Length: 209
Image (tube, rainbow, N blue to C red):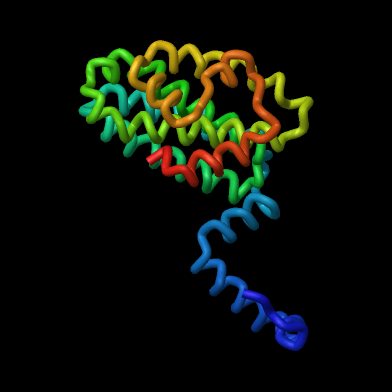
């Protein structure tokens, strides 16, 4: 929603007490904005502190999810929940590096801990999980690509680990290849310059569904 200059001027000219009440009332209705302002104005944590907290939570939550694992779909539910928390973290801290690194950690933790169980699942039951992982792997590559190239080397080990996890999961590997994802991008940590366009084209052809 765009605000015209007259409205902006009227807001700016509100009495300080009235303006403060209005701001607090609006913040109560916008959880993300309230937490972002708290992070920027009050909190003594920095972005790295918050990222470390998220890393710990991802490992802890996926360790719990592994203990109560019931099916590939239950694991999808767990990682979707974590993905939402990562998105919230990014909105609050503007941590673009963490958006890539935390998603990469999430996939590796999920696969490291559950590949043996996933390999025992019927292909039709693991399909939705595999599609989610491949789509998320595409997203991770697009997120890394837009970071400054000096950061790319810091993702090489994680990408190689994800490549190994793909290789250890037969149906996941087949799903990746069928949907136009080349696992060699992970193994060699070489992200195509046109990865965003490639993903758009693949989706336009009806894949990743």
